[in-house]
Image 1 (tube, rainbow, N blue to C red):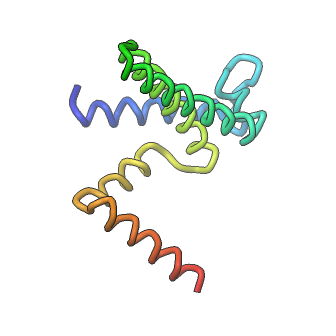
Image 2 (cartoon, one colour):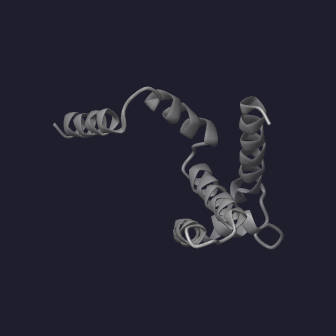
Image 3 (spheres, rainbow, N blue to C red):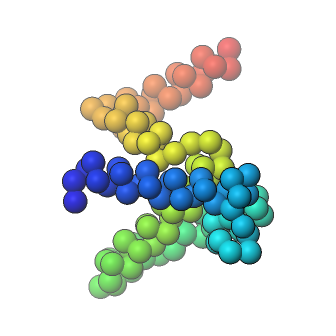
Length: 124
């Protein structure tokens, strides 16, 4: 699969999530995504936390002979629920990809220093 089709797949999933927003006619009785969005941030953010924990546990299991596909499945769940959070706050996977591209070529230490400087400037 090419990077373009990967991005397209994320964009299609993001469009489905958008269509499930209660404001866009999503029915909490018929859609899991609509139900989470209808319940509000506490509901979908709890799922993000749960899925992050499950991804960590699956990764730790991989170190002891566990199925690596379980890690992939848990990360997929984490990404999915993170996309619901992004949609709620008016963002999309493309925004995350753009941020990763912005960071490309920066060392992690340089990137962290830049973020700290931006936070300092914003608070002054």
